[in-house]
Image (cartoon, rainbow, N blue to C red; front, side, top):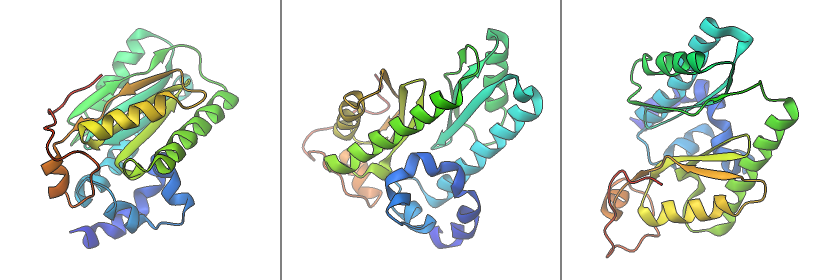
Length: 214
């Protein structure tokens, strides 16, 4: 299944580069990125498609009056950015929810003026620093947590054990420039992590609750 999905992934992977910074910088191919991810290959490719579809629909319906970023992980869409009114914020959430295969929407857009290029560049730098700290910390694979930064606020998405989530939050929270961390990660048990075929640093004797958030 993973091999069959590779041609589709190669066409879509560009949209997910921000969340995979250390691996792209390290020369990993799109196929290797997918193989290292805890999502199935089908879900990985579907998430890329969800991002493109939501982004295109928002652009078509709302044009340049909004600045919106879309991040999808495990079919759940995170929407960040700036819009001119609460009504348009609701509209953005509605557009995202109506895209096929989206199972949940985190509408985090702010009613504010559109951010500057320098502010967006700062957010990109923060994302890179957080991902670099994940790599340097060696507590879990940095590919298991997707990082999005907007106005200094870091959003974390992924399929992780409770210990991995705690470690990711701590590393992100203590990264320079970060003003707040929003945890959108989905919690899986140690046994579930092993079933996904990926290494976990969690203690197998400690159960992990499902779908907790902070």
